[in-house]
Amino acid sequence: MKKTILVFGMLILALLLLFQLSKYAVISGDFQVEYIMAIIAVIFLVIGLFINKRAQKPSHVPKQEIDFKKIEELGLSKREYEVLKEIALGLSNQEIAEKLFVSESTIKTHVSNLLVKLDAKRRTQAIQVSKSLNII
Image 1: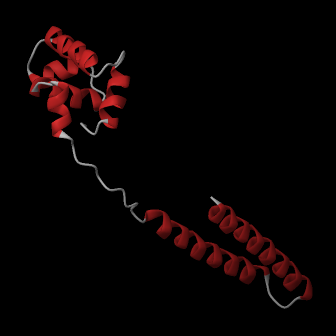
Image 2: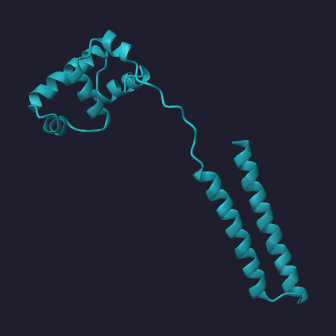
Image 3: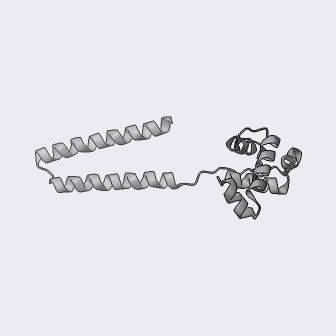
């Protein structure tokens, strides 16, 4: 956070210095306004490319592996686990039923079983619990 504040502070300082130098250059008659604007534009282009390059670097987040032992300990069936993964994708009961070729009431039963096994009150809480247990 301190680094970000320092970088933006330096950018603002550089901008102010550029404007002051350009003002003095125009007043003294050494440069034409078009040349000064072009120089400022090129400098900001370089700064923008530099910031974009740094922002485009992929963050190295190690992907955690799924804990299959925990799934077995919780007693989740394969179908319940499939339903849990679909819930994590944000699908509704009807969409999950269509995708898995079962009835909506079957999905509701699986969701109820998941909530009990994960000790959750809502679907969102079930997703949070399952992510903390590294099962999705």
